[in-house]
Length: 604
Image (cartoon, rainbow, N blue to C red):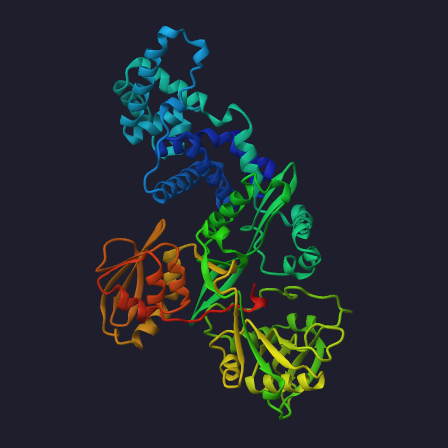
């Protein structure tokens, strides 16, 4: 392992080729350990590959190469445990699929004997205690020494020797030799395929992969590459460590972009991975690498401390396979006829600017945060430091800054009038604003009459915002697009325990305002692969790891809709397979009331 020290240091600095050498040095240990836990070489390889991908993004936190085996063992165990719990019961591949004995090389009269031996080997491995199975798997899968096996397992060399000696006693000599042969024949180091698969899915490097990402995105969305260069990726909260790409022969063929967002749930915020611009090169749609890229991004979000993840306007059926559920409509729109807008002149000074000026000002981002505080589904700005789709400076796209008598900015408005060279006679569109709702409506009324627009369209306006409440006081047409259609904004819980911990103060506030303010008890929440307990004591909510509780909720991924307050909890429970016991239904109503979340376009 001493010889790997300089290679490991290069890998920590981001050298992928050096990391491939680290993978080559530890691949057999990782797969051998995975096999000992899962008793399936295919599943063990999957777990090991995911573990190496996760270890890569955490490598800078590892002190040196001698600490790497312990980290790798923990990550392999985590992925094996996830696989086991996800499938409830791991299907063990029979030893007939593992023992490679070419039938043509065997004399016919030995067939019965070979079959009997296969059964004996399968039963023998299954009967070994797990600690002995680990020692045998790790020691005989490759040419590792007992000292290296001991370092990986975190035990002494004497313990490894005792486990190997005990395993040999349990097995007949011939069976023991066959087990050794099986382990050796299934070692990943027998060829380069394992390293190749690990190399395919990786975190993008800004210097090396930006152009490849832009070119890939251009294949799906015309001109998106320019937008990404101008702001959508290059000047945003795009998380280069957590995003994932798939490469083939050095070319970027898949992309899963993750944006580091602080999303509001009532008065709390949770770290949310905004999943954006997922795509695959058309030549590789059937290769499975797209699904691997998305799963790798999900694993990286968990490893990097994200609480939840959201995505927008992606096919519901595709992302449902990864645990995402519908969170809010793709687009909520209010239409107000111009005649119903205020006729009074604005009580503020208007400064007409190019829209790019809006995104570059910290004071305007702070105004937006002030007016959107407490609105579930919105995020803390800025998320795009130059705007999501910044136009060229000579491209006419007017915005307005509101100023008070002292010249201080007190609000802004843009995309009203809509981005057109000729605004006359067309609907105006409100895309984004901050400030006093009455002044916003007065400005829109003035502009709509100036350009003879028949009406104003308000897009993705948060339901509980001050502006939305004021708009609903006017005669309006309300439209929800794709609420139950093919696409929509979707949400997923990444880490249940941390999510609940961060929103616990908000849950306490809600509980104290309800009839359950004096409630004392515990609520166990279980979702796929995770569980946590809400401990409730007279209006104070805290979070504990999963265990036994007085009241329980067993849910699928739909619990993310409960957390977001997509609608009344009873509606979500009724159409899902959630199982509630005790006072769980009553607690849901108090803790997770409907929030009608909405995320403005510039948030993600």
